[in-house]
Image 1 (cartoon, rainbow, N blue to C red):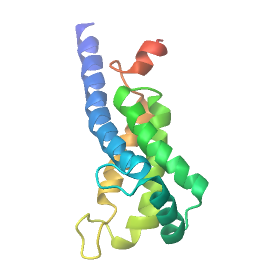
Image 2 (image 1 turned 45 degrees about the vertical axis):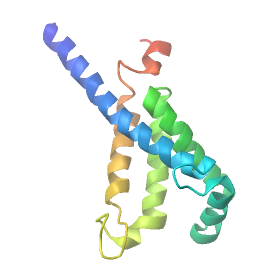
Image 3 (image 1 turned 120 degrees about the horizontal axis):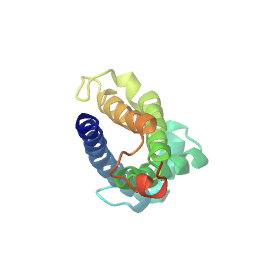
Length: 145
């Protein structure tokens, strides 16, 4: 009995250790796009850049901003963790395809930013999609089983 409790505690701690950095990263990146913080260009410039340079329609740009900023908050708090993780994972998959794939694997590769960083974030987000937020999450408080 004690062994399974210790294992569950370790699992929840591991999920928390994924949620904290992933949430912080996406709150920061979402803030750049939505609010122009941390050296970002803000909402209008993000819409323009995504449409003109990447060919991403405004509705999908809006969903990406919501996934990054809102998903970052959700992941950090463990609120709607699976949905928040899915939004982040989808955003990272599109970023890999539209931006980084042509640059190869390595982040500091000879052709620029490769998929390495996006792949790590995608993996973290998918771990949360499949496992949920763990015991130390808002989800656990609202959706007790």
